[in-house]
Length: 165
Ligand SMILES: [Zn+2]
Image (cartoon, helix red, strand yellow):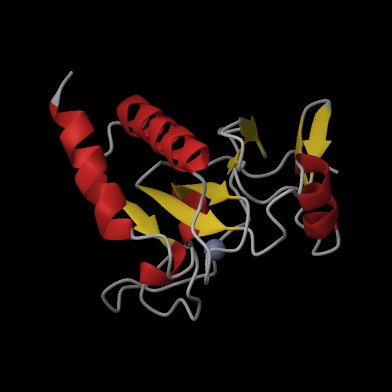
């Protein structure tokens, strides 16, 4: 198997939830995505997690797949009716582990996730408006990252943090 295609550019950070039990590990999510053929390879390294970052309930953050590579976390959504090459080619996927349809994330998870997204925004020169929930993209038929995660609140906090150097 050759290397997975590289990220062409980073225009977006897409926020997800895993819709799994909250105690699932990186290995559990790797197995789930292996079953969906989300395999990636970069030289000697390989795996199947579709997201670039996983944020766990205890506040730890782990790499799902290297940031150099395209993820497998969003469909070919269209934006403003334009022809769209595919959001996976130009976005980073950050996944909060758990199901936030009815229950909220943990405090440690929220803080760790915001810290990680802030780091990624600074590294790739993104604004808070370039951080979107999966379900916010036109044509995305999903409520991901769940009704209990408020993307507006995330963006307000990020905008506040990014104002200071
Ligand atoms: Zn999602």
